[in-house]
Amino acid sequence: MSPALLLTGVLAYFVLLLVLARRVSRGSGAEGFYVGGRASPWPVVAFGMVGTSLSGVTFISVPGSVATSGFTYLQVTLGYVAGYVAIAFVLLPHYHRLGLSSIYELLEERLGAGARRLGSAYFVLSRTVGATARLYLVVQVLHTLILAPLGLPFAVGAAVVLAMILLYTVEGGVKALVWTDTLQTLGMLTGLVVCTVLLWQPDAFARLDAAGLSRVWVSDPLSRDFSVKALLAGAFITIAMTGLDQEMMQKSLSVAKLRDAQKNLLLLAGLLVLVIGAFLLLGGLLTLYAQSQGLAVKGDALFPAVVMQHLPAWVQIVFVLALVSALLPSADGALTALTASTCLDLLRLPREDVRTRRLVHLGFAALFLALVLGFKALDSASMIYLILKLAGYTYGPLLGLFAFALFTPRPVSGRALVVVCLAAPALCAVLDFGQPWWGYQIGLELLLLNGLLTWAGLVLAAPRRH
Image (tube, rainbow, N blue to C red; front, side):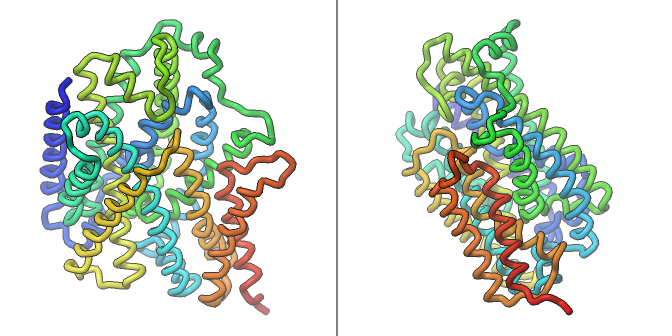
């Protein structure tokens, strides 16, 4: 299919999103922007959050990782379920009891205003880095498939995508995202199903097993992918990157009743296991197809290469629209959540200050663009593991802060908070890059280690009550 026709389809899709966002968010105001008016239907929120949780990185990187890692990523996914249960029954009751617009208000209630600002600052750092890495990957694929053949530079594609996202989030915020993310998740899953059906073979499972691609469990304790480590990492990645993340929780806060918000998260956990399992199956089918055709591509390049070079032309437009659908929920949600956290937590603005909120929103879009252009110089075979690795450093202090605030709340000076939350990831970096542990390799459990060091440091820094 011609690049011009693919570009026309992408632009038409953006127009559809803009029309939907404007219609559902008309007259929403500050309450609609920050918490969706606290009236979002929980099944819609759960379905839309599938797209937000997975993103374009999952769409591209998870299938591409099967050739080297088999189905071992499913271990992490099963750990996600335990994490969502913890969020639903430990964190959500606190958030709903306090009627929060920003989850970092909880840190202020327990530990003071300094803890709220510190938690929000780590969220801003974490989400900015993670969202721009995800955004870069998908813009790069769109550039390769559409823009480069038309003679358009990478920067133009990144700027256009961000401009489109700005148009439908700057006013509607969470109220718009609840519905646009639902449409985007549907688009992403349509692409997944279509490609899987086209690549399916009657003896697929036997061939996957014979090729050694169906391996799920890793019994070597020294391996980075050791099953126990992966399950624990999955649970704490979910707690930190969902339960302690303003972007992910802002949609659950938009559900009026606690019980419905809990059902939303439990349904989401089940959907994620099914969807990620399907992406791994697709990755296995793509790998078998590439081997049968003698294709040398691997990693993040595998899925686009097979679709664009070997499948029917009509599948290409399905793939591109699914890819855009996978990109947008993580990028638009991040932009909205970063604006909310900066305005409410860092700047402490009144919620009715629309002018400043718009300027902050625009500022983050400009920052996203600058970082995406910077990521273009980075070469990584699989962005999914790079993003999870970075999350271990940036979300670890958040995990330790919330654990201390919820279970061992004691007064801690602002200076001690900052010192501990900077020292813990620094120590993790020494342990991670030094690797002095008799062959043991630190993997995704880095997040848990970082959180434990932060919590322990805060316990030592806080005076004991007598």
